[in-house]
Image 1: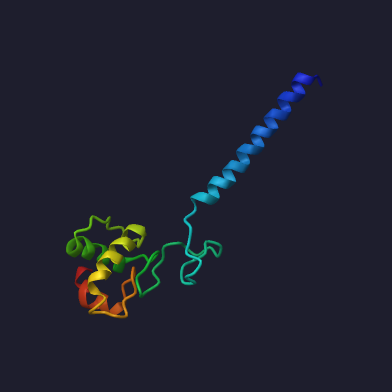
Image 2: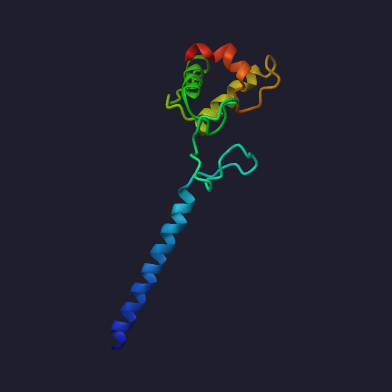
Length: 128
């Protein structure tokens, strides 16, 4: 094998290796990062879906008809423009946090960025 062919093979191998490494890095970065401080949010390693119906409180990564009702409520009462997709993502969490500022006096157990069952039953149930 001459020197030119050997150099081409070495360069091709390096480019292929860099490409494969890049794919793994991008794949890892594009997965949604989860909150390691909250054990109720899946870690992505157990195979549990990221968005799931986990009951109350409604919070980040909750999913389902109750989240759709919450999104309709926030759009109607809070003037937000959330997609009614039934997924409690970052936009829904931000809207809930802004709305929580007005309701914590009436519902003191309400945690910022979440919706507990009492508040849901009193205010959001009619949006189902």
